[in-house]
Amino acid sequence: MIYIGHFSFSFESKPRRKTPQPWHGYFTAVVEAATVAAALKKLETLVITSVESSELFSDVSEIFLESCVELKSVPRGGFLAHVALEEGESLGSISTTLPTVNRKYATSYHLEPESPDEDGGFDAEPFIVLAKTKKTKAEKADKPAKATKPAKPAKAAKSKASEAK
Image 1 (cartoon, one colour):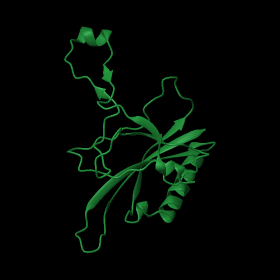
Image 2: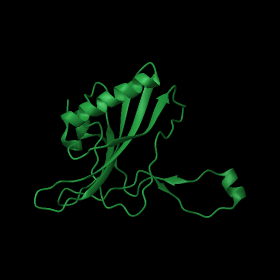
Image 3: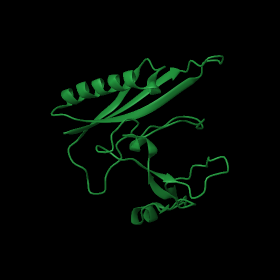
């Protein structure tokens, strides 16, 4: 059976010459095991190994298991496995996908802008923009919410992090 573990953590950065700043983050891990107890043990081992072998978690002292999903099968249309909501505006973040995974196990894809800014950066484009229209209950029952493509179409590209090994 496949198990998906969703985790969260928070910490204060310990930069030299600056005031420590609060940070928080989330990550997802996947293991295969015969039982949920075995999966939790494998997830624990995987997280500890990741903490010991990566600077990603250098200031983190606690990691919380938000949920452990037992994946019996996947519906034809897929499913959302985890959602996290945070109060307030996003103040920016850093994220990566498959930071230490060999490509024989998994490949990560992302959307790349057609033309980056002069400094190489870019404004993130949404993957899906939901149309915001007011509908009556009858209209909602008859028609699903519309989704539109991103304002600037982007090319799918393999994540550089997944090409590491």
